[in-house]
Structures are given as C-alpha cells and as structure tokens.
Amino acid sequence: MLRTKQARRTILLALVAVLVVVLAAGCGSKKGEESSTPGTGTGKTIATYKDGTVTEGEFKKYSTFFGIVQPQTEMYLSIPQLQEQFLREYIGYKILYKPLADKKLTDEEQKNLDAFYTQVKQQIDSDAATKKKIDDAGLTEADIRYFYSMITTIMKDEESKVTDADVQKQFDTTKDDYNVISVRHILIATADPNTGAETRKDEDALKLAKDVKAQLDAGGDWNTLAKKYSDDTGSKDNGGLYADQQAKGWVQEFKDAANKQEIGKVGDPVKSQFGYHVMKVEKRTPTTFDKLTDADKESIKQEAASAKLNAFMTTDLPKLITNIDLPQPPAAPADGANAGTGTNAGTGTNTGKNGTTNTDKKDDATTNDTKTDGK
Image (cartoon, rainbow, N blue to C red; front, side, top):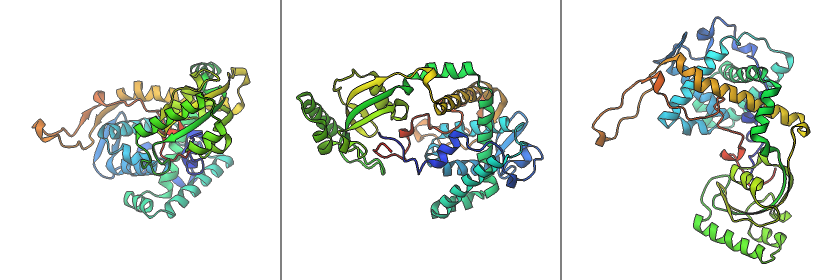
C-alpha cells in the first residue's frame, strides 16, 4: 500500500542497506584523507574543521554524487539552511572515514561495489541531463566509488558498535512498526503518485471520502465500492485489502491509523500525501522481539547504527567545525542589509535529518518515487 517503486529506488536502498563496505581498488592509493578525497583543493575553501578543509569543487562533486542516488538532493540544496546542514554532515563523514579508508575489499564487497557502479553508469548513460551534471562537476567513476564507499563504510563501522542491548532498545521504541496488520482501505487521491500533479481538490477528495465512509457504514460492499472509488491500483480489485502486512512499510499517516484505529470499525478519513484513506482494520497482531525475522533484526540494527551516527553529527561534530563560509542569499530589500558570507561553527542549523543524509527515515512513501500499489 502506497510504497515506493522498488526498481527505481534500488540504488538508494542499496546505500541504506549497506551492500558495500569499503573503498574500491579503482579509487587509488591513500596518502591521507585530504589528498585522496575527490575534488580536494579545487576552488574556494568553504569550510574548515579540525585537521581539514572542504573546497567548492570537492563539495560540488559530493553533492552531484548524492543527486544521483537521491534526486531530491538538488531541491534540498536550494535551501541555504539545508545546504549548510548537508555540508556539515559531509564534514562529519570525512572525519569518521579518515581512520577507515585503508580497509581492503573482500571479493564479495568488490562484487557489490561493481554492481552498484554498473547501475549508476546505466542511469547516467540513459539521461542526458544527469550526464551533463556529472560532466560539469568533473565527477569520475573513481569519485562515485569513493563517496559511496565512504558512506557505507562508516555505516558498517557504526553497525559494528551496536550491541544486543541497543537492538532491543531500538525495537522497544519502534515495536508498532512490526505489528502484522490486515486492513482494507479506499484511497481518494488528490495527486498523481508519479508526477505529483493535482488530480482532485483537497476539499472535493475529503467530501467524497466522507461519502464513501457513509456508504460503508450503511452496509456497503467493500469490493464494489473499492472498484468504483479507490485510486489505489494495488488493492482496488481486492476489496481494498492488504492482508497480514508489516506496518513499517506504509506511509506514516496510514501506518499510524492502522496501528491505532479500532478493529472492525470504519474510521474517519485519514489524510496522507496521496489523498484521503477510508480504512477498516480487520486484524492487528503484535510481534514480540523473539519472533522477529533475521531481516527485521538486521534492519533494527541499522536503525540503531543510524541513531549513533546522528548523535555524533548533532553532538560531537559542531565542536570540531571551526568555520562555514557558504555564499549567503541576499537579504530582502526591506531589511536594508546584506547577508554575511560566513557562519560560526556554533550557529549552524541542525535539521534533525538522519546522519546518513538519506532523508529516507524509514518512510519510503515520503519520497517522490512512489506508486499506489502494494508491490
């Protein structure tokens, strides 16, 4: 129900899942972090930190790389505060990667990294606009391998520090995600899930959703009404049913309702980015820690590792950064003053993003690559 298009998000999911963990041989030998980082020394210095700097050319390469694996990056970087946060996180990665960069590849790690680059190369070659961005940034194959390996190596290292107690604690805070739920719903969409184009006014969608609820409350048939009204192609021909599914895969608002709504009762319309959902929870079964699958435990371990990384980014990193000097947008004319060109390390904006800069946040349906089906 309202999950991401898995095929189109394979690269980003691979990044989050840490399929590769060390630097590819093609990236060259290491002579210290500053000399080996792609783009080092090109352009103006835009940040200084304990034992290092970041230049414009270097940051452009990194930003362009992230724009490949996560297209939303370009939009985020148009916002000054988020651009600064992105730069700060990059500094954090550089600091954490310095003692890890000389690790050697296993055969399996080399295979995974090669597969990742092959997919990226296909993406670049199939899209002229992407290829131009790559060329403008001077981003090479070695650079792509380097940045990917930097992030995944750090995540793997953070995972190695996660204890069984950390995993249990992380599960305790997110255990509702592992509830197994059977739910029927009828989606009254407000936007095309692929393009984002408006398909129905919000007020019109809500009015129709309330009407559908009234018909169901009066004894209307789910199969008939789902086929007639639902815009969710993944369930409309099945009476709107998603049977025995883990809650964590659903968009946040839908997940919350599925976890809290009274069983057997048609609830009030629930609004999400897709529109309004008319829902009835038919069954909800909690999953205890001892019943988790190995895949679930691995996912929880990664969440705990991300939490540790985020703690470093928000608590320790600001003490290590001495200056940020990103160009600032001009102040509005009414202010009568020009914006400054630099910021102090202690005044940066922390957006609370995951330390992996993935903005995936466990909620796949918050990305642009979505479709309204249960695949």
